[in-house]
Image (cartoon, rainbow, N blue to C red; front, side, top):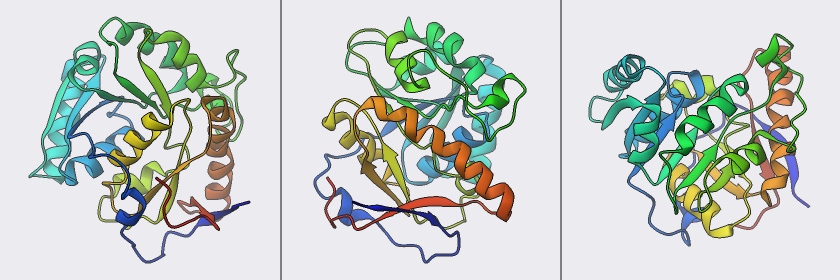
Length: 251
């Protein structure tokens, strides 16, 4: 069984193309709902820098435009635009949801009307107690078991959910000159959906995607965010996670 280890931030950058050798060609565009936040914005920077066309969604189109403008300052050659959430959700086949848990249900209810059969939602939301004024190292109970499972109930039939990015530091992503060397745990009910997400995320140097099981495992992967927050507070770091003992070819 693979061992779990915190990934130090100083490790040498290693390209992970070998791990995506069997993954189909990655999507060339993605929508990020909540990219005005730290994790979503960092993801927008990294993907834009990797040549992916990024649509940033926000409840307020002015905030979306402002986030897009900031991204283009950091990545001048990138393709980044801002839109209102519903329009942004309709703009790409892959939609990343990166919002505070307090906004999760409302945002999904709003964008669900614009989503269509065949789209894929990548949910990075974590039900931290901080959403209701508690500690960021504690989790909230979710009736469905996890934020991602709640999302699967709220999106239209034909839209699949893959949970991801719970252990990737927002600060590390946002510093697009900072080398990454960590794993992204993907959970979802369809292997093909996870492979598609892996093909997208592995365009970011230093990220390796690992299939961590069915969507019900999101209740565990989401809780790892609270664990890493505690580790990072204690050590004043931006630690990630690496799994050891895995085969060279994961997809």
